[in-house]
Amino acid sequence: MATLSFPRPPLVDEVVALRPWRRADIPQKFAGLSDPLCLRFSWASTERFTEVHVRRKLEVQERERLEGKGINFAVVDVAAREHVLGGAELYDVDGSRSCAAVGYWLAPHARGRGVATRVVRLLARWGFERLALARLELTCGPDNTASQRVAERCGFTREGLLRSHLPFRGGRRDTVMYGLLPGELS
Ligand SMILES: CC(C)(COP(=O)(O)OP(=O)(O)OC[C@H]1O[C@@H](n2cnc3c(N)ncnc32)[C@H](O)[C@@H]1OP(=O)(O)O)[C@@H](O)C(=O)NCCC(=O)NCCS
Image 1 (cartoon, protein in one colour):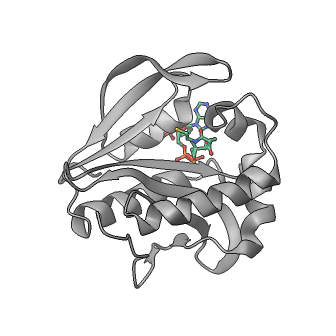
Image 2 (cartoon, helix red, strand yellow; image 1 turned 90 degrees about the vertical axis):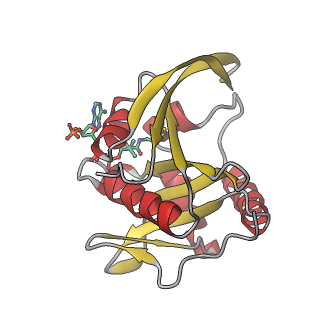
């Protein structure tokens, strides 16, 4: 797929906005991702997570955006856009199959009030309408109840369990696979 451009105007609702990451966000991003729940569900390595990982990942994500493979957003407060609530992305974007996957995380202070649900709805709508996706996937660990609730609230169908799907913390992890088709977003 061609380079993925950030949407203009940006994706917003009454509570959240999605914007490109800025270098000044790095400390907030590192603090949010260092939270035990984020590490438990999103940090697959056995290495200690550091700010260097955040910096390197930003560079990788920008390359992937230019190659049309993914696009990563800072999730910010709509009224205070320097205030990072979390992050979200479309990744594994595959133009030949018109498919992509959605991922997200929130800092502890932003959880428990439906923010992730809002973010997934914004990204799913944009993916179907602007990127002409025919299928959006959402995957998570079998024990990640909050993430599964987000998927279900947005209208995703639980399609199955991918056994021994990922290398994770020196072992392997099963993955729950959810899928959403155009017209199913709720
Ligand atoms: C997953 C995550 C983004 C959810 O964000 P959120 O905005 O807090 O989600 P919501 O407020 O919409 O809550 C979703 C549901 O999960 C429930 N929930 C929240 N935390 C929970 C927990 N620890 N255990 C069980 N259920 C939980 C909520 O009650 C809500 O249920 P409801 O729909 O029945 O009301 C957030 O928990 C997070 O950042 N987790 C760490 C990173 C992560 O897991 N990322 C996803 C990887 S697949």
